[in-house]
Length: 588
Image 1 (cartoon, helix red, strand yellow):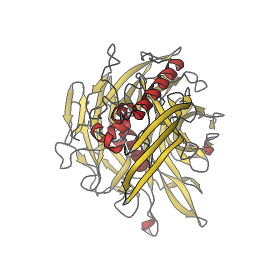
Image 2 (tube, rainbow, N blue to C red):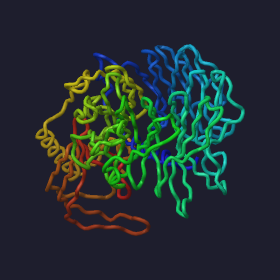
Image 3 (tube, rainbow, N blue to C red):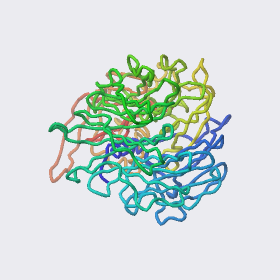
Image 4 (cartoon, rainbow, N blue to C red):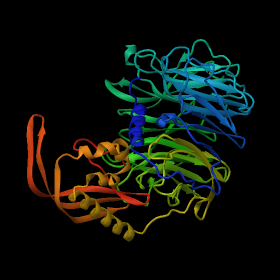
């Protein structure tokens, strides 16, 4: 697979997961319990995130088992949906419902990249054998499935069967039992065809129309431009109107998404020059207007743009970074669909923590049946990531203070999604239950909204005062350096961060300490910001004669200042191990 922006994002998040850990496996929700919990799922990255469907009050989940088999859970029953396939396992799961029809969709890169679909016509009780959707191999995420009122199922997807990238579509008219023998290419092949760059398709239903959008690049007046194109079908994908360029500019476009809100179709995306942008069609995809960009978003690098709406208000959320070295934040803004105007200024949602110290990832947004907007995201303010929630009850003017879903730092919880109900949201997320990362759980909680507090039923965070944490840090640092000056290196292992300890077994730790001898250490300065501290220690040390690459290295007794980061995780401080080269194992 060629590396797309989405692939790179998943890889980066995978590196973060590799450094995460969790504490004890106690259940913080013993009183209420999750609405759905699967105790062990496949140890993949974000691409292995389970899919949830609310089937008229019954929760269903599509996921990969620890053995990487595609499974469907409804109630207390679990069925393997890849049983009839040569290719077992998958990722990028989707569940869709229309009436009694439930469509399970997934992707596998095994045996030349294909999409698989299994259909149930009895509300998920039984499934017909899974079928391959595409007629040739080369499918890449993203992909989208729709079912129209006549029962026709359509799927649009990105493909690399020919040089570079194309957009394809296929349909089933018999409830997913069979698919058209030849899928349709929706983008127009450029000349030469090796320059095809159609990517990131999405599809929504508006009235009786299916509207597909995607991005590509083309030369316009001698310059390369990013473009967004659209095609519309009014007969369930049998025929498509000619493609139409609905946006273009001298910049790169990504994080594309299409959304049906009332009678409008809204397309959101990132323009590398203009920021978070939106387009609107009020006539089911026939004509389009540009709503412009969210004010101020052109000054940041934005990604993972999500949108939800109700009536004439749409809520957009996204991740934003000033530059590659800065920590990502979560922002939200509103669009008045009647006037086509954005709110005056986006609001940062992941507030209440020191500026620029820890990052936030993967936001999602939804609107409940009662009209409340809810945002969730993965937040590293407690070093171990936790899921946070914020809500607005006044069309985005004021957002509630972020609330933890689990006790700060007790678990590594991440990858949250929202499904709306009338006065609550279904929150789907994952967590690791132990430091060895051998168990990855999937959970769904039905969280009620409260206009006074934001959300009800969430645990009250157990936190120590700043003074207590500072006193514990001073004691912890002094003990750590006393062990070093005493030459008891083995005992310092427990003082290092859990990500390092996951990577370095205790039995191998002592032999990596080299021939350092520490004679004295004195704490000069401590600077604490939230759960991250910078400690400056004046240290006198020497290096005994040590053979290195055929030479003997020796450092006489030397006094220097050593600055090290320490992090508060759940109930204690840990020094962040810093290797001689490259980044630390712990990322936050």
